[in-house]
Amino acid sequence: PNPNPNPNPNLDAENDSANPDAHSLVLQGVTLKFPFQPYAVQRAYMSKMLQAIEAGEHALLESPTGTGKTLCLLVAALAWQQRQRRRDQRTAAKVKAERAIKVKEELSSGEVAIHGKGSDAPQGKPCVIVYASRTHSQLSQVVRELKRTPYRPVISVLASREQLCVHRQVSKLKGQKQNAACGSLNKRRQCGFKIGLDNMRDVAGALAEIRDIEDLAEAGREERYCPYYLQRDGVDRADLVLAPYAYLLDPQFRTSLSIHWPGAVVIFDEAHNLESAAADAASCDIDNIQVAGMIREVRRTLTLTLTLALTPTLTLTLNLTRTRTRFRTLTSSLRWTSSARAWTKQATILSTPASSAETLAPRSSTSLRSCS
Image (tube, rainbow, N blue to C red):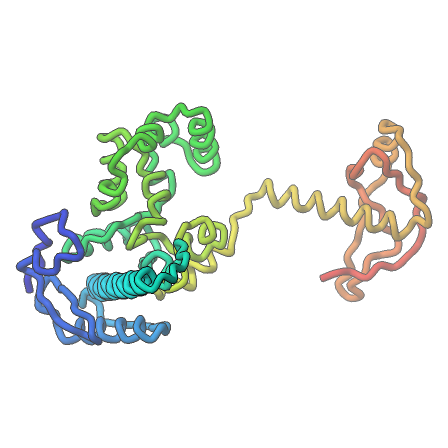
């Protein structure tokens, strides 16, 4: 096998013959350019993938470790995308030629019809390939594999500000603080890197360069532009989008992406991690302070519930001091009986008032069913 990457990093994906090291083969009617003579298991893997894409079906593909699954996925998907683009171009050219003939006939017959900008040619952008992996480090591996192929699509690598921010102060922050600081600087037009991106003339050329996250950040620092916004805003013109699982599993992330989803090819690499990634996306971390706050809110809710249940009419007062004093005189003696699973009749609540206009009525005996 010849594992050497393509020596020409600016090779156009349409130029199949520019890489002398690439091996050409045809699978499922699609011509592929592989960086070396593929093994039988690799040919079978790519053939099954192309079969699923052609049929518009889902596919669960498995192959032994070390057989180059990532390389096979990239080559098969990009070759199919290239074939589809050529088909769309031929179809559009055919429709355009037929329309020109029709207009010429109308002019010669004296019956001129008004033709708007609408066309019978295929509309919408070409299908996009979305390649998702669990971590950013795995996406860097995908970029390295892509460099080995003769394909050079317009690529967008989606990552968070923590990975791509190059501002000296903002890059040191984390989480919401970093997002807020970035938004504040951009609103006031005080981020030199974002201004540099806005003034960049060759955005398409920057997106055409195949770089991993580390390379993107380094290029942003050297050329004085924001790699985070370059990649995020470049999604709508990208042929290949690399993103972590969270960008597809989280509805907020997914709807924020300018991806033409109809007809898109979505690849989940290392899909055995998908279940845990989905669980993480639907989970959250709660610390002790938040738990204590929840307990207080539950007690306040129980206070109001018992107050309304025990009091025929709720007495309102605007005397804040008097209300707080009366609440301080109450003691909490809620008792839980595991056998009867009911609140005892002698129940008083110790809690702060939900508002200054609430006053508890005298205790009365009642029975409340617990909610488990």
